Length: 386
Image (cartoon, rainbow, N blue to C red; front, side, top):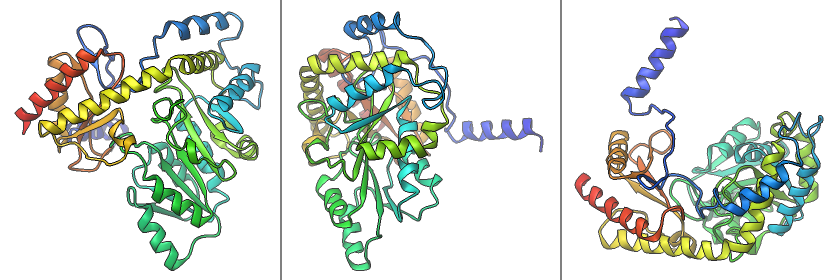
């Protein structure tokens, strides 16, 4: 079979299975409101970020020119890392172009010296890929199954140096980590914890530091935060001890062998951190109030959405509406688009078969009245689909 035939066959299979993806420009204007993106606090067009970054742009180069270790370590990177560490109250931070690269870096750097890796089955693809790149024995823990895993390990024994991988807020279900169970396993195992706070940073805690801020121990913990979601710009960082940062710089392939981020991104992150300090509190309160209100409205109208028990869950800006089947999820999104609402279908294999869905991402780009009207339309269409 020729390459042309093989490629065309794969594309045809994806279309037939409802798994075909295509790039479409995202609209977010008066005619179409998006509830698909992760700009939860509506900071991506904040004038202070744009103005502050613009002032810095005239003073820095646009290109990084090389990896951080080979000619690309501009002074702005050390400055933004210090600012990130100060904001998140961490000993150190290492800056990356994306959360994907950051997660691969921390998992592969520490996974290579661990005796076992244990990761939640619903971790992000970047964490899963990082685990797979390691040659270390690994255990996939059923989602939120840390209590059962602790019970099992108590009977069979813990590895000498386990590496534990989890998220604080899961991007598809919008559920927060079972803090009590995860912490109990982490403490009793004596392991090192990697916690991805990508969707929680900026949204949770009074200061936007994330879900785990009250129990972080950087002597055996590292936290991933990203700036392309609640912070409204781009880039990511690993929060960690100075020793872990040194290990990353010396062994993490996705740090060593990639061109440094553009200094422009560092300028945007610096400005976003300032805005988050100034306005984040009120924006977080508004976003989380809308999350509580929408969930209550859905429950009252019989919409089948997950029912969680923690405050984090109730205020999560991520609300999945499971439809079952790629075709149903696609059709629901298409119908909503006709009424002026942009939603994306989340299909198998991104989620398991039967759990295909639309994933609502609440954001402050939409007004409160628009958000309420959107919720009403979701209920109307859900009833039509049921």
